[in-house]
Amino acid sequence: MTSRAATNATTDRSRLGRVVREALRRPAYLSMAIIVLVALIGPLLVRDPLEFLGDTLAGPSAEFWFGTDQFGRDIFARVVHAARLDLWVGLIAAALAVTVGMPLGALGAYRGGLFDTLLLRISESFQAFPTLLLALGIVAALGPSIPILVVIIALVNVPVYLRLTRSAVKPLVDSDFVLAARCAGKSQGAILRRHVLPNVSEIIFAQFSVNVAWAIQILAALSFVGLGVQKPTPEWGAMVRDGADYTIYGQWWVSVFPGLAILATVLTLNYLSDEIRHGQRRSIGNR
Image (tube, rainbow, N blue to C red; front, side, top):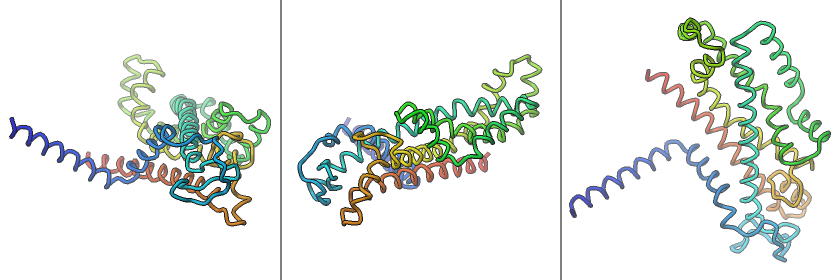
C-alpha cells in the first residue's frame, strides 16, 4: 500500500510538472487564465470599489497597492471589479457578433447571387465608417447603458465575421463532401451546420479573441469620452479619464494602473489569437 501511494504521488507530481511546463511554453494561455480568474474571483477578495476610505490621492503603498483616487477609493479594488465588467462586455459583444455574422457569411457564400452581393454591400457600408465613430454616433443617439453598449459593439463587429466566414466558406461550396450532402437531399441549413461551419470554426475562434480585445478597447474609448459605462461604476476607460487631469500634478497612479490593465488584457488576447493560429498551422502540418 505504501509503495502504491508513493507511485501515485510520483505520478501526480509528474502530471503537475507536465501541466506547468506546457503552461510555460504557452504563456498566452497562462496569462489569459490569470486574467479570467481575477475577473471571476477577484471582486470577492478586494474592498468595495465604491467605499470612501478618506485618504484621497494617496500613492501606492502596502495598504493601497495601486493608491487611491480623488474620492479616496481603492484603485486596486476598482481595477479588479472593472475587469469583470470589461471582460463580460467584450465576451458577450463578440459572441453576439459571431452569432449574427458567421451564419450570414456562410449563407451568403453558399447561396451566392443577389443575396451574397447585398450582404457584401451592407457590410461595406458599415465598414466605410471608422468603428469608433460609428459606435459614438449610435450611442449618442440611443443613450449609454450596458445592454445598448453590448449591442452596439457587437453590431460594428458583425461585418468582420460576415466577410471572414464568407471567404472561408466560399472554397468549400463546391467541395466533394458538400456535393455529396446535396445529393443526399440535406437542406441548406443542415449542410452549413453539420458540414461547412465545423471546417471553418478554428479560423473564427482565432478571430474571436481579437474581437474581444477590440470590444474592450471600444468600451474603454466610449467610457473615456463619457458615453460608455457611467459613474460611479468602475470601468477601465472611465478610470483613465478620471485620472488624466491629475497626471500632470504627479498623481500618475489614478490613470496609469487602469491603462495598464487595458494594455495587458488586449495584448494577452492578441497573443492568444496568434497562439491559436500557430496551433492550427502545427495541426495542419502534422496531418
